Length: 139
Image (tube, rainbow, N blue to C red; front, side):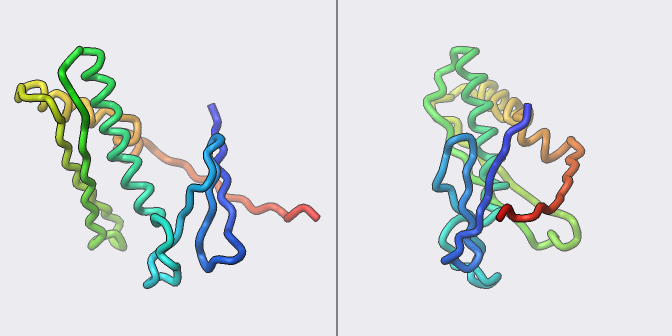
């Protein structure tokens, strides 16, 4: 299954991009002022990181629903360490709180299940192939 994401530079902005994904509009991406942006929206790293946190939360919720556990909600904090990014190491620490889960074994199982979310697996065990090509603007 293929999905297309369209990103268009906003002509009146410095580096801000408008994103359309499967009918959702008005998503934006920008970069910090230190990199020439306006900080008017999350930067690409933010979206990368939040996709992991959101996927882990959804995966844990789906599992708890199947098991009929008393999970009331999930809070996730993603801490980013880019100190070695230029050396090829990008560190993310994910801290999850499972609201309504008192049983330690259930909590640990939800944490373990969160490692199986598609984004975690994609980030840690998949080979990602990127092909980039340019086109000519239609007149």
